[in-house]
Length: 543
Image (cartoon, rainbow, N blue to C red; front, side, top):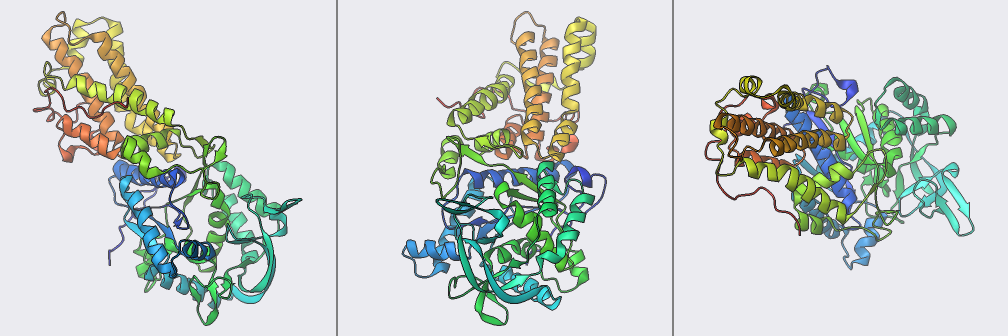
């Protein structure tokens, strides 16, 4: 069994300056009753960028988990609809699709976990037994508004009654009144602890609006005990409740446990727990499952006396024609076709630019093409192509003193532009870090493209290809632009890893000089050998 990494540096503003074990980032596990869509892809890519950035910035190990949620009535029904008699066979095939998507998107995940994995099943039973032993689980009659689509009961104050039926306020899905015998978790006992934690921990939920929303709901509404099992007579596809063959665990119970199972739970002893990667630094979820992760999940952990994740990052949805993309609405976009069409890194670039954590994003193929052609190809790729042309020599340009030459030979206005590029390049790492602390990937990427735009303008104005430019000046200009490309590419590795490393390969940067330590002017004088020749462009525009 793989030994978990140790976490050294944290992610997030409230954790800065403290030392931890290896960075632990999670995505939610995705339900396998239908194929993945762009929303799943965005969650994966965002989590991957967060993990990669922390590993890159602080040069410490990271641990990223993703996976699939495979139990529950919806899966049982989907298997039957597909003509598959054994749900296990159905989920085995379905989970492979999500795993292929993670690979196609270039995820650096360390574990793809499935709720049907043996260690997850055993972890769910272990947590159940712990909560039972501590007196937080009891059996009783349950009546309530149940949503088959969401696989959850909703309290009276969370549903709305209309002429067309009764619906969940949170998801808009129809609910029905059900009475049955269930096991309950004493969620009501943890209301005070949940409120105190959120009041005393700024940044526990990001964006802040979601922390305020959860606090308001806890303050204004009673917190009822949670039904955490279902009768096998209604849903046989799940983890059997320990000691009761007539009940299976509520699908969200064993689904949430995946985070613990990924960290090696149940641990043999306290020392093993302390040496594990638990708790997660950042858990990333869509806004439709906030309650499960901001209320139920921390309450389970509190009841088991386990540390809670440091930050819950909530992102918004993707819309198409004004409606949220979802499997139930049938308006999803096939992420595999998109990656095949545009490439993994161009898709990552679009998602990390246009996706948002504080407002819904609009899916647009025109926008994808614009991002690819205008920004990746024109501002980034074309600059690389120019610098690598056969008329220049990146390697030779690194031998001159550009700063001294410009100050002696060029007017103050030109020197000021040169210094502006130097300053922006040297501060790029810190400025991008400032945005990544807040998980605003679009602003982080904007910092890089502002620098590339400034450098493109500098090259256009300087005209190093002109016969009127002396050789020393030409080399100084090429050196300046080459350093920007090198630094920008180093910083871009967590966002567009394949493309960034292709460019670094193209300008012959050694693989051991692509760390954050080298993201400053003059830190590498050894690259560029054999880089100047015609062709081998890093990107091609889409016609």
